[in-house]
Image (cartoon, rainbow, N blue to C red; front, side, top):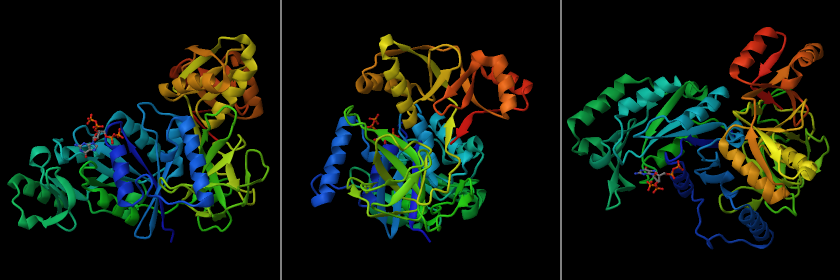
Length: 508
Ligand code: G4P
């Protein structure tokens, strides 16, 4: 069976995702001090080229994919950008993982962004391990937190560990299966390896009562229920003080699913299939406007990839030889020699690869289920210099290819509309238009509130179009989109046009 575990961390900002990520990588031995990493020849050159790209971009590409290894298991941790706002990037990254860790703050419980990301996981039945962080500080009662997860997310919860007090009276975290307690030590009150039996400790009666109740009040952990996305094991800990981190790694190794089969136009594709297949879930561009090269991130679905292999992208249909793929190994990025199902490879290209593309050796498969999401914010693009129309069109096409924005070209009128799922994407759009395309543009309110992709027979589409031309647009692929003024508008049209499907997502 595969030794790969490909996962993401979902959380609300400030819950501790960054801290936990660092601790996971440390445990896996993947963080090296600068200079510690020895590199020679080709590998070194590749690494420094890559770092140059990162410097130019000014944001970290490094953290998109982090790989670490422990006890024979290879962990691929995919970063979901941790901004206040979502981008489609965040959503799409979740299409490339087999499981997720949901981090919640012990004092705050489930917060809006946690819930949103959770819903995306649920759509795809991505199994979730819950980590209740910051138990070294005052938090809510453990039962309250467990109830909240169960109620808010409609999941069966199974506590796997239990904090012995929190905040000022924090005495450690007990593994409920073994009765062993990881203890804080020293001035920093960190976990440094000290473990005691609960029976040897002096613990307040109410904590002992809690633990007794915990033992009877929750179902047994059931790996099938977890893998179906119906049950979540819950670990308590402190990323900052290193409590619960090893338990999480062990839980992922032991419970989290190895690479899962992926749905395609040919039914599900099994990871055991021998020829290489995969799909692009993210494209990141180089900031240097002279070099329009990008890195496409491909999630391997099956086969063993070797350097120089010819793969055909479903978008262009023209085979490409992948000579210098990037394998992500923490800070130490190497030229990939081989990669297998569950791994991510970065493929440098000049815009030929798009998010949603399938790549395959035999050019026969098309993966499904990589959605575009209906934008929640729509804006008209206002060009400050009318002679730059062509550049703007090119830029909007490029950036929508990258998944930074979606673009809609109305059937009537010349003002193009961009759609995003989070405000931040709009800021990114304006600054990249200026920096990379030398196009000064502004955004203004659009009369539309949301968009729906239309599906139906050619006849039904045409008769709908005849009556609703002012509300129709084409997306980047030329597919027809209904621009709605409100969600009421969507329901109204849906009722009146039962032969059409108004879809909030578009699969490519
Ligand atoms: P994020 O990526 O989810 O946004 O969270 P991040 O790891 O950056 O953590 C947010 C803050 O919470 C950080 O404090 C971090 O040190 C703290 N934190 C993370 N894990 C724990 C934990 O287990 N216990 C405690 N007590 N704190 C934790 P910061 O950057 O210093 O901000 P602030 O706390 O000074 O505001």
